[in-house]
Length: 248
Ligand code: PGA
Image (cartoon, rainbow, N blue to C red; front, side, top):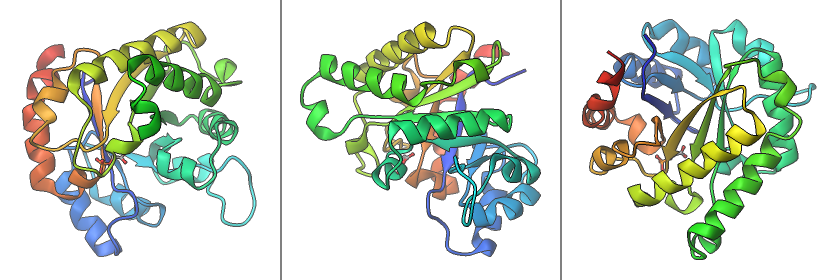
């Protein structure tokens, strides 16, 4: 049976060697439901894991030198791809590029983990401002993708407030719940055929995972820094064990 809660380990630009990547994958297998290493380590991680799924941190929307296509990714066992992470948006992935990448992923039959999140300046404006920003980002990031989502296709949307990422300070659980509710409303309107799984990301740590995991509208975490430490990852998984048991 499918898990009702999904923990995704986003290693970002870590570790620095294939040897370390192999060890980290071995220690994280089955603790993170999806492990997302840097591209050069995908094949090694695929060989190491038995229980977790394999994800990619990006997919190219154009061909040519340096591009990594969806087909290449599926050929090494990748089943899903993170698109629109704020660190990629900062490097030039506009909403238009993001929606192109979503289309490339879907054409290659990869599941999409779409990231959205507001900067500090928007956050200061309160819930209405955050909702407006996230709604616009989500709509633009999914523009032109409706025909490619099959009925009941799974779509992950990760709400990652930019200011919370890597800061050690997560968003307040009640606020996460409200933002994720509006994410669900926007997706239900624009892509009524998909099965949406909403995630929270941004300084998920053993200390706050229990409270964030109790947010009823959250069905998983996208974890960066803490996912590089198997002890922390285990503690996070333990604090949301009640959510894993919901479906049994
Ligand atoms: P963090 O990163 O857990 O280190 O804040 C989350 C992410 O960037 O996906």
